[in-house]
Image (cartoon, rainbow, N blue to C red; front, side, top):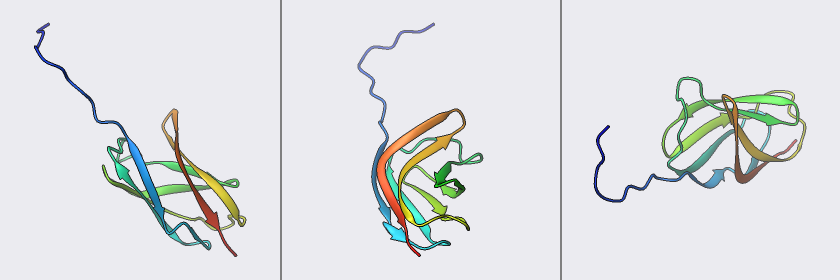
Length: 97
C-alpha cells in the first residue's frame, strides 16, 4: 500500500433536469446532470406506473429513456434502477394522453 499526500475529492452526481418534462407514450426523455455514473452497457431501468423503461443512452451528462407502450397517464418520480441500486433523481416526468 502506498499513501499519497493531499486531499482527494470525488465528484458527486447531480441531476439537473428532464427534457421534455412531459409527453405521450413514445416520448424520448433526456435526464441531464453531471457525474452520472453507472454501467453504460447495462444502463438504467425506470418504472412508470408498472411499465418498465430502459435507457438507450448513458453518458456522464445525460441518460435517454423512451416512455414505453401501455404507460398510463400521470406524473411519475424518476427513480432510476442500476443493478441493485435505486437512485432518486428528485425529478419527475408526466405522461400525457
